[in-house]
Length: 131
Figure (cartoon, rainbow, N blue to C red):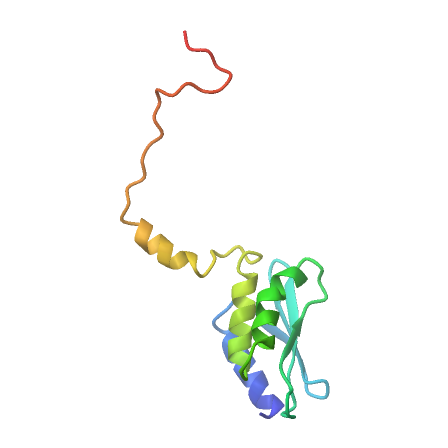
């Protein structure tokens, strides 16, 4: 796929996420992304050669551990598209962005019908004697 088409797909993905495409370097086939509060990563795009895959990385030591999910996904079998890779990165970074885990959404919908119970007041607190 032509690099400009990949950059357009990345810009479209950014419109639905907190990330901005801050640089797109065609000669290196690299796209850099950033979101507040200091979450950054880059994607190296394959040039269409046999066996080439996307590569995601971050130069931030705070961000790098969160990319493991996306890196595992990329290295798994099957060809990946840039939007699929970016979605995995977004899911990986949700905790850093202060967003709920994507898997928590279903739980929240389910638990919305459950009434929260008030803590019972007749339990003694630790270290406090009842008189």
